Length: 263
Length: 321
Image (cartoon, rainbow over all chains, first blue to last red; front, top):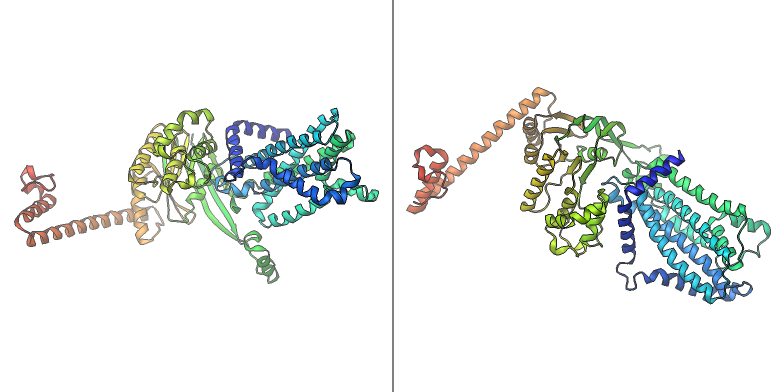
């Protein structure tokens, strides 16, 4: 069943590639229209965010950490991408309800196009990230080439979470407020600006329950320490992604024809 | 083989469930044991089939379930009961002007909408100028969509959707778009598409349109199927009579009776109109100066006794006295 679904999705994507391109184009435009700086915000906002965090946290937590800027920045860009992708994904069905209830198009296209524009943004911030790595004197090792792995699975996971959220959002509009609160909690639990080695061993393990933290840690290990994580760690990254993607696919499959009644 | 085959289709909406009443109401009603989910059948046991080249007109007053049925035909909704089979590519024009992006330009919206209707980029590149020309929006191509008037918006929507050759074309109240001139143009365009072997489904409140365009008719009322027939004129007559008397036909003979009543009534109405016009002209005749009096007299004669007039006065309207 799963290979069949994948095949159907890819043929659908191929057939609708032009629509998909148009949707990505629209999402990109919607985001930057009417802003004076336009696309520059993709780069500026993570930088400003980083500056603020540096100002607040470098004295507090930064003294015992090597390359604290990069440590902070790794967490920051991964978290920012996660937030953007899932929050936009959540709205993707609702915002396009006028279209979905008039024209028969595969509904996940709207979600995927949102994810693509978030991903492009993420790509831009990664470039800035590496510029910072150079100025901060990070040694570039072959291990960094493994970064495709967490990025790939993170994209998959965000799509899955976006699917779950967008489906829930149709039936249960309150989710947007709950999710905002959840995101705040998640930000504090993802060890973005602090290190977890002060916690006892058992507590540290709990952090592995947080997929965003798992991803951030991968980045830091590869970039700052030049270490490629263990095989089980790789499996954990993939497991989270597939879990949420499966969940999302299940929701979409189950409610595909029910969404229309609730717009 | 039927192009659209609709077999005993029923579609149900549910209202008053947890989601639509909110948490507080839900808890209160649960506690007072007053919680009921209400069912609402938008369509019940609708059965029809349409062959290639047919034009089906769906009539019925507001809330009859017409639009819901069309959504089921296009595959946006799936019927709660029954089956719908369609063969071929469907282009559906349902409530056209919605679903555009207000912040994007006319050009971008044209491409976006075209993409949603399943056109390829190459096709759109070729036909873009034609689409804009048909919508008469040449000067507005780079305007933002929200800056257009509502008539222009619908014109664009219609034009994008029409420059295709779908196998099935579904029109929900879209031929009443734009001003008179555009309405005529869009009607002609529809006829052109339909004459090419496309199967059409038309929902319209304009009975004239249905009479003119359709060769099959489906009459819905509050979700129930009153009739499905290819005797379009008969059922249009009956429907118009129903609109003024609000009496639903119970059987085939009722339909004939309604249609007959209608033709009688329209005959009476026509006679009444003629009488009024004659009276008006007579008044002019009595009061008027000689020249206008003669003109009025000729008019009356033209209307009621054309044979009494010399041929040069016939059909000339005002004539020269």
